[in-house]
Length: 299
Ligand SMILES: Nc1ncnc2c1ncn2[C@@H]1O[C@H](COP(=O)(O)OP(=O)(O)OP(=O)(O)O)[C@@H](O)[C@H]1O
Image 1 (cartoon, rainbow, N blue to C red):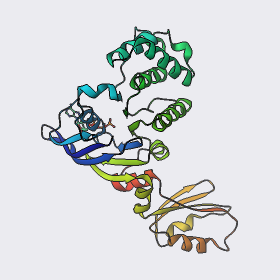
Image 2: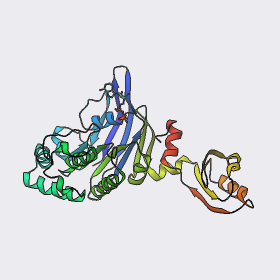
Image 3: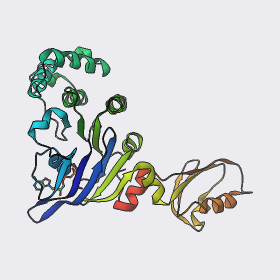
Image 4: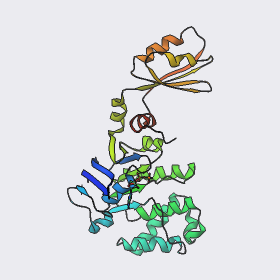
């Protein structure tokens, strides 16, 4: 089921939050939505979910509109987390699962499987308010997927989680994809998108500045990175013609180069100067692309 946004615009008074956005989000894949604060990611999600009217344009899912009757096919982890603090995890999930039309027994067996997967079966009968923020987020994630949605929208799913929990959640997201779920998620962390997504979009002031398959996006960027580790001072490499950005680190440097042939020049400039431990020509990172297209870094 392909999700298709056609010329979608959202205005709040005279401010444009999303500006003529056209995207195709392929089914059974993980699609990454990047953008600085206020770029329009959450607004786009809300429009996809039918929680907010579009000012212009259209959104279709499998050539049909998304409306309330399809809510059992869609899962949503909102940016603003919200669970009932006084309810136990079990009562919470049963309540939310029932709202999605599930039978109680099915909810409980699905819940138990998820709690096991997240290594927290003991949370079953705990009140939500007794859990840490990160663990509440896991429960909220379970509430977004308990009904096995076909389309899953995750707004900043990894924010506020420690590295172990990030890994658990990533694994869960990949497994859901492998089981046939179409997933769209937003993140401020480039490496999450880089690791998980086949397709992505970078929004800037509501407009897509980068859109496409991860590999094609990197290839079409043109610039590459050279990473040098050496036993001598490599500072002079920043003046090699064709080096556009220079980042030193303790044992060497990372150089952004305008095209692949500049790598040969750097290689030449290193010869006879001392011991070079490693010399790597690498694809640009999403962070490199983001910096150039949006003019800022998340880091
Ligand atoms: N209900 C609203 N009324 C007025 N302006 C709004 C409303 N919702 C969002 N906006 C504005 O729309 C723009 C896009 O906001 P949005 O929340 O979609 O960005 P975002 O990319 O999700 O940002 P963040 O990463 O900070 O969550 C912002 O300028 C925001 O102030």
